[in-house]
Length: 472
Image (tube, rainbow, N blue to C red; front, side, top):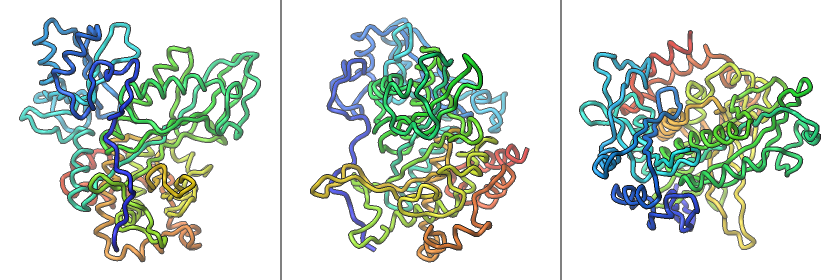
C-alpha cells in the first residue's frame, strides 16, 4: 500500500535556533551536527572550563565517566579526537571479554558534548562509543548493538526508526507539616502547591535542553505514597516526555534524564526512584517508548486518510506483538516488573494492540491538531510494556529487530487481526498474555533469540549469558 507522509520534516536532533544560557551553544554558534574538535577546544578555553569527562554507557546500563584535567591544547585535542583506553572486562562484566585481553577505547562523539551542570570544577562532558583493540566498534557495547540495529532496520525496511521515552519517576522526601495536599490517584497534571516536585521537574527540563537533549514536556503523575509514620518518606510521581530522535540519541536521552533527576534530587536532599513498583497497590514507573518510522527526513503517517495502517506501522506493530515477551529481558528486568504487570494499572496484560488503549501492549495514541487540522507532532506507535528497570539501548535495539521481523511476517494482516484489542479472544485467552515471571521471559527470549541475533546485531554470547542469568 502507498505510504503517507507528514508535511513537516523531521528536525535535526538538538539543532535548536535558541541559545541557552548554560549550554555550549553560547560559545558554538552553529548546529551540533556541524560541531568539530576545534569548536570544543575554543569553547573549553572561552568558557573557562577546566576539566573533561568522557561519559559512556556500561554493560549494566549505567552512565560511566573518565575524568581529565588537560595540561595543554594538544592534550585536550587528543582527548576529544582520540579518547582513551579502558578495561572492557570491568565495564562489560559477564560479556565474555577476558581480563588478559580487555583493553578497549572510548571514542568521543563531538556533537554530544555539553557542560556538566553539577560539577564544582567547570567540566566539559563528551559522550562516547566503544572500540575494540582493532579500532572497530566493540560488539559487546550497548551503544554498538543499538547502532548496528539502527543500520539494519534502515537497510531492511527503507526507514530510519526514531523514538522518544516517557521517563516516569518518584521523588521522595521527609514529610513535614506543610505536606497536606498529596493524594494517590489525584496527582495527574497537578500544580504547586499540590505537588512538591514541580520546581525540580521544571529545572530538570531546562537543564536537559542546555545539555542538548530534546524534550517535549513534563508533568506530575498519578502516583502518591503517604508516609507510614511521622517524619517518614512521602513519594510523588512525575514524568518527563522526551522528543522524537534517532534511536541512539533516544537511548542516551533517557539515561541523561535519569542522571539529571538523580543529581537534582541529591542536591535538594530528596531521593529519585525509577523502580517499576514502589509499593503494591500504587502506580508503578513505566518507561513507554513512542516510535516513528522516518523516510527522507519525513515522519510516516501511522494511518492513511481512510484509516488503514501504513505499511511500516504494520511491520512495527506485527514485530512488537511477536517479540514483545522476549524484549522484557531488556525492558522488565526485576521482580517489581511482574508485580506492576499483574497489578495492571494501565500496564498491559495481554499481547494486543489498539487505538488509544492504555491497557494494550502497543497503542496508537491520538495526535493533537490545530483548528485547521494540522498535526502538531508526528503520529507514533507506543510500546507500553517497558518499565523503569529497562536498559534503553538494548531495548531499542530489540525493537528495531522486531520491526524487521514484522516485515518478514508472511501474513501481517492476519496477525494484526488476531492480536487486535477489538478481538475478544485476543484479550481473554491466557495463552496471549505477557510473561508473568522471569522463567517465562527466559523462555520467550530463547524462542526469539534468532530474530534478535539476526544480522549480527545481538552477539549470541550476550543472549546466551542473559538467558542463563534470567533463569538464575
